[in-house]
Picture (cartoon, rainbow over the protein chains, first blue to last red):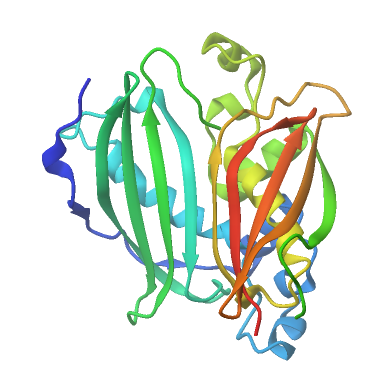
Length: 152
Length: 134
């Protein structure tokens, strides 16, 4: 089903602030086999100039994917969420996420197109602190597969 | 940091077992059933349970971040999820081999091309990180 191109440029209001917890950062770092003590040890992180332990680079997906759900589940957009796969992902960093950050994520639809029977949706998630400091932008390409297609 | 185009970064090999998928699901909040339920995975046409694309992406960047001495130097990281990493239900799991090399150096920044392979097949497309060198 073709998506409505009028949705390009639409933003979805951010969910309540996400507070980055130390144990969540450690859990995520273990799951992606990150070994640098800067992800686990507060003293090491502070000695290297951070206010607290540092989240691995792909941690931002926790926020951007949760926020993108608002888009995927938007009935008016008409995306068949049962056929959605993650096709492409890019992060642009202003700085690493650290434990204690209070973050808000605003998702915008950057593009909608159809190719080879698939609907292809490009979203941009701007992640900033509650005081307005930009931290990271997450660009995701979501592919609603027609009969076949790539992804993950 | 002294480096030129073509400089190879130390490579890394990661093992991905079913337990690793469950751990990543919990840590990331991504509980999509195709990453832990063989029945559903095969019903939707996959050969078996597959790893989260974001887990493969998260593992692969270790090659760059372990080589950088500070995570703040990472400016961008992106990839395409081209082929699934199939994770069998055994003790061996899947093996992900990640290599990387410098593809461009300019203005105090370097572009690093990352290759992630499983059974000799590339699983991430156009995986690239940009890092600050100064």
